[in-house]
Length: 374
Ligand SMILES: Cc1ncc(COP(=O)(O)O)c(C=O)c1O
Image (cartoon, rainbow, N blue to C red; front, side, top):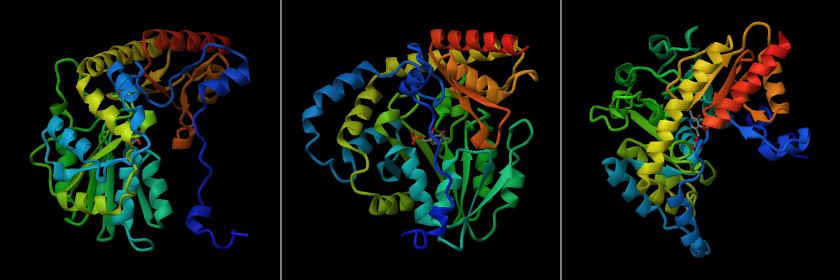
């Protein structure tokens, strides 16, 4: 009945294929022990301070959150030492991405520029908005050619997306290169720097300032940075993302956003998570160590592994075993990783860094499968 009236952009969408859940795999294969290393979640789970805060505030959920999430915004401004007027909070950074596309790109006229492959939401939300999406393939080694990306920009480009560190490769460009791109773009084109995985970028002895742009005083007026509480803070299920936007755009964001998209418990969870510095430090250390354990372990098994500054690794199995086979056999042995066919990378797999025993289990099962296939 609605076939003829549903907008063509929506009809053109492929059904979303979500990652497999632990319960699903338990049922399908009749196995008890299943680990999920597919969605780049926190390997340590939930912070105790967050758990307590959620319990303490359970009685408040019959109320609506305060419009504009003022306590949350004030706490973030204080914590990060950035002006409150630049902060936009959303239902995950997904909402910030969606809103920026909808706020800036006019359907049937404007375009959005990003790399290929990239985080799927940039092209999907652009498609839904009815704007052209222009994509520059990343280099063979998954690094970025910013000149080529810039060559796709014209007077109708409203947004350029850059992910740093990148998903799915883990590549992290030098911050000065990203800044150069922002400076070259026209004033009315927003560079969106998605730092979802930035917390994990610094190696031992480095600081976030070596890689991140969100606190840089010299960030041009046409640049925005996105951060999320889904990864290092362990709050993926509560959905909180933050945009540090040009002040003028932040004002429009708050006018256009659905009024209560960040809920009361999510607010309390962030306030508690910001206080739990020990949990966050332990998370960062666990990821740094686990990333090394996985990288070395996979290389020892003959896989090609891409250097990553995020909480996941992208790799290719040795020639005698297809990525699809390894992915499916890992599932049947209770290890969920991410096959990258949906990123147009059918020969690649992405594995999230787990805790030490999850990493060990993943490596053991991978080794067994590779031997079986030899
Ligand atoms: C690059 C990137 N940006 C944004 C997100 C969205 O994160 P969230 O909506 O959970 O904040 C993800 C999620 O995996 C991501 O990989």
